[in-house]
Length: 85
Image (cartoon, rainbow, N blue to C red; front, side):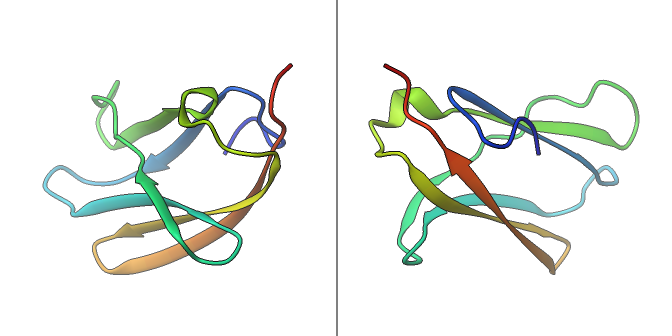
């Protein structure tokens, strides 16, 4: 995930095969669901990018959790969002 900390646009690079079930979600630090993160079209083969304009969500600065599930395999990572001025 880059950048981290994020001030506006978050990008998540990952690999997945065609037809794999991909679900990437953003949660606040208390575990409350905020939004799904859309997956952009694949550039080459199994490389994909999910992207989210964080500044459009009207969120406060703080720690957030990204939960990614690809074919039932779950991975979580903390991100720090710093609201722009």
